Figure 1: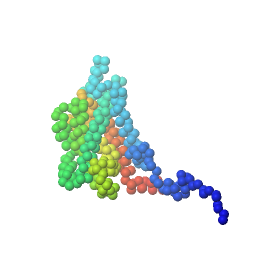
Figure 2: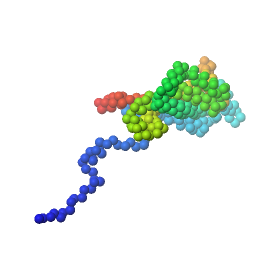
Figure 3: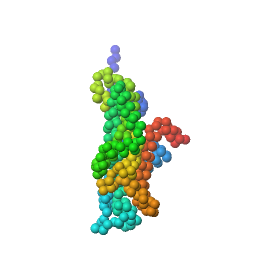
Figure 4: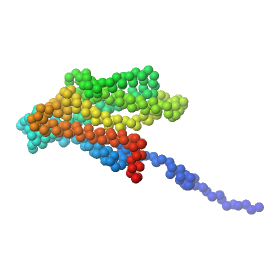
Amino acid sequence: MNVDNTPDPVIDRDLPTPKTEALAAQAPRKRRWRERIPVVSQLRQSVGLQRGMLVTGLVITGVFVLVAILAPLIAPYSWAQQSVNGVKFGTQQPPSATNILGTTVSGFDVFSRVIWGSQTALLVILAAIACSIFIGIALGLVSGYFGGWLDRTLVVIADAIYAFPSLLLAIVMSIVISHGQSNLWSGIMATALSITVVFVPQYFRVIRAEVVRVRAEPFVESAKVIGVPTGRILTRHVLRNSTRSLPVVITLNASEALLTLAGLGFLGFGIEATSAAEWGYDLNRAIADVTSGIWWTSIFPGLAIVLVVLGITLVGESLNDLSDPRLRTRRRAGGAA
């Protein structure tokens, strides 16, 4: 009887086989952290005109943010400075070497106030959106997950706030919050909080609708069955899957916040000129100048508002279109053709 003493072949289980290679090819590639950033991921998906709109909006918005951050370095004078080296600028002076964009009816440098106004606008936008997101997400999360009488009450309150014109509501809240005090930080916070009251129902509705959808998913039900605490379910399972629409809402609300700030300043409910520069206030002071042929006091603050709102709106609308799978499929089909 012959005994085969040949050792069995050693199979290296770490070596890839055709089956494992096929499974690895079918497995989705894990996205890098840069690809998970909302704007970056949408930019990679955009093509053609849509990409041009998104890039244009990002460039305008980026320039606005940089100007606001570097305002102390870019602006030649302070927002309320009326003289240099003991020599007054004069009122309603045309553009010159000393004042490259002229002066206002109050003797302020137009270029400096436009630059400093970008900083005021950025601070108000950030404060308003931060407060709106925090309050709106918290209320929407609790209302959508627990439901019941609390959900009905919050929905009725949100609908009641929607019944008021947003600018009128912002004016009323600004008067209630500021009590006539309009220095830099109190004016910024009063304006931001008045805008927050207008924005909270929007975030509440968006988050609540997503939470109502997510809470019925099997993974949430499984978490309840195995005894996961409610707080952990809300934060780790429900909230993380209910914020996909927030980048779009944030960009669209940023432009609306800037317009509300300009409207409050134009109507005289914003920040005083000696406390901070604000584009809406400067437009209000320049109304009488237009009929006298003095164009520089109004055109530059107005142009700043238009450009910033245009840039933020282009970003928001592009993200809104790119978040729609039907539009993405249509664009890809058009590009392939």
